[in-house]
Length: 286
Image (cartoon, rainbow, N blue to C red):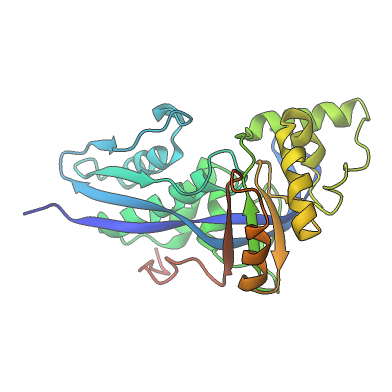
């Protein structure tokens, strides 16, 4: 008999805007902005093991095993729950670009925690799982909240926001932006007082990290110029390289996509009103 298995979605997020307000003493940046989930999703397969081993069943040149926070999520949950006889094989079908500012790694980690809570029959509350989620990275808790949100703090404070559920054309420049490097460049620009007007066509980006990302990764601006020509705007999501434009209808977004060069990776996505795993059983109590 095959071991129990779960196949679960891990949706991407889009930062509609992002503003930096300084840094805490521990170096974490204080920020604010609005975030939504979209229906671009990775697919995660969790297969139960009863030997206590946590095994990564996927490989990617850009994600070393020691840096895989989906794996770390399983390890920390096993440790915190004390269920050392239980293990899991984790396979990830990647559809969310790595280094794209769409939160793919954080979403993977959140889905692993939610899935293992069921697979290992822990019956933990969302509040208990969130303690592990916060330790894994600032974006991970958002995927537990799972609703269109105004975000503040270090990305760990959420308030439900009345955000129009629109359609988005996502365009992927051929670079993977590294979050740590983008924030370092932002700090450098701030320290030497070179923060100036965001270069056209990214003026509507409403993202304080835009100039830093463009400085480090020139293809972002090159692709933004193309997107601007077909959509009238080009915005940057988070600290990554993904550019997007907002449309009132799926048809309008598709029409704009068809005007892009065929060599340019792009997709049309819809905003989600809630996380697709919202109804997976998570208890309210301890």
